[in-house]
Length: 411
Image (cartoon, rainbow, N blue to C red; front, side, top):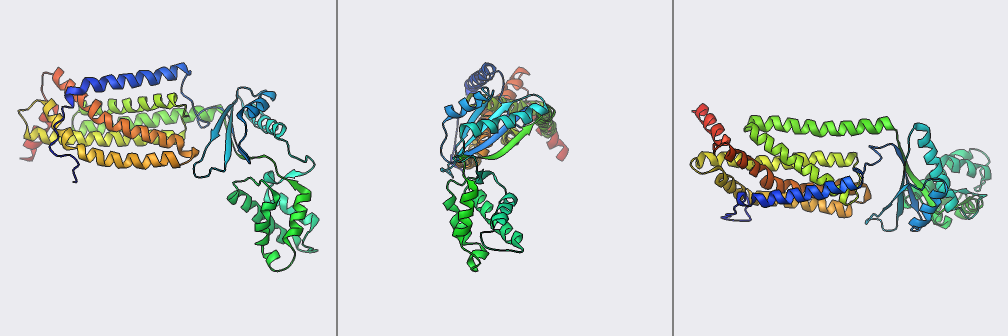
């Protein structure tokens, strides 16, 4: 194994009180924030409500949007801007409304759309919004006007053209056409125009007569009822507890129960600190965040097991030494491995946090925080807990007893 540090001799257990103080401070600050805000912020996955993702052609004024929502009785709506560093030309908002009851959920969706229509009206209300029409509706409108002069079998031809237009709008323009002249390029690429059956200008003229382009488009609508949200919260909690229980059993079998208890307490510590930081930085808890927390549980536990395993090996070689000295030696010996694995993983998730876009923002934030806190807790929380327990028992090392028992079984 490649080593970054040689002959490291850091007294980690001598600094255990500072680790404990730092952890207590982070826990107090984080959970004070949760208490001040009335609890954690749950995403639409876990709470009852309606979330509408809206894309704008130009960056909208949050105050204007909020006033429009308030006019429709939605003054308590949450508005979150989405910034995607990979697509700086996108201007999206997520509008959330907390509601109760299935009928209220549909009503909230309708009210949000109505508020947007009043706040950002189209330039010509008599014409439909091209950004809101589907390929079938667009094909039917083209068949009625027949700009390419097909008298028979026009449906198939215009279905192909309409599909190409909507695909261009959704894939190339993010679902939002700012100017109808942008459609000239996809029209010129259609087989009918290329084969001389008509001109792109003729189709474009019909589109301009029939459609306009609005200032926004509805990208996505999510509706979650109370039963679904409550059930998902329960399942997420149970999944985390089951994972911790399984790891406790494994480590208790692999070492002794005190090591399993210390490792599980350290992981609880990691999760609680991560949740507190989520509250401080106003991130929401969603299903992807639960996946990140479970990943954090496994990652932190793996790092702890590496240290504990080295402790067990060193106990066989250093039987006369106090457990604190053995633990210090073990952490120092695995320090290079910890920095290499944790450091490279941290850089990866940091890039994901910076460049991954808003969709992965909460997930990557949980991973960034989790790797830092999980690595720290392995030597700053789990190991000192074992040493403290051993000192309380009068200096009898449980690892030593396990090592001696297994060694005698082997002989």
